[in-house]
Length: 355
Image 1 (spheres, rainbow, N blue to C red):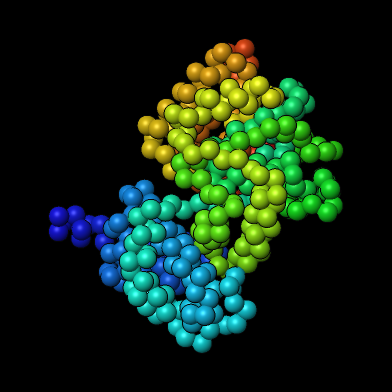
Image 2 (cartoon, one colour):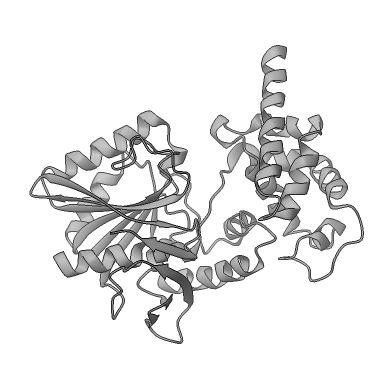
């Protein structure tokens, strides 16, 4: 047991050190904190209660952020741009270590029971063009978003898109997300008709529950103030439209939702940076389940995942790309077809269309 513990602490220290090096420019606050945590065994020890797949730096950061959002008068909050306009005078890394260790029990509860969830409304950009292609082929679409979290991907027909070049798609008074485009995607004149949608998630976020929404907000990195504000606006929109997300397993519970979707329109499964959290065996099982369903009914699947992280998915075999790749998989009359469409920013800020 002692040997296992030492190996775990060593592995965790390396993960935090690697994070610090990788995000020193994109997330300067978390980069500095990660470098400090890599050398703080007492903080690393907190991570031992997390599920193996969630023993990652961003879960520790989100857990601390979650507590800090409810304790905004703490000096550490002045180092989080999304919380305070003031700039703190103390050392952020010292304050972070002090903050989490003083709240060790609360931290362990979050680390043991939560998982990182990124519900970025900008990711709707990933689905705009594939959905336009599908609508032109099959008509009205019914979406099943797997790994839906709070269901913000289901708002894709309820928002507006500012495409450069291309202009505004949708109503000017709607929540608007921006995207820079290269290549020649099929830019629609109007938002595709998504007549029905549903989400599926192992741990869905209820947008009407303030505590759960706070967790979703906590998963946004504090340097990204614009993303934090955009999330708040998207949550308000999701509350207004009563977005539905079912609790369930991606493999075991997707079939009945696809069957229900098919009664409303052409069923389209969407996955975006979620299948990397499944084991390789479960990813294979998910693909096999969609193959099974697609053998007896027309079905489409828009994938936005990293091939390196999910080599078992259609079109990903043999690729070492860490970047997000958008792939369209269709089943027509029992035959599967795979089209690689684009590469994209992880939050949908830009898309390079390849087709």
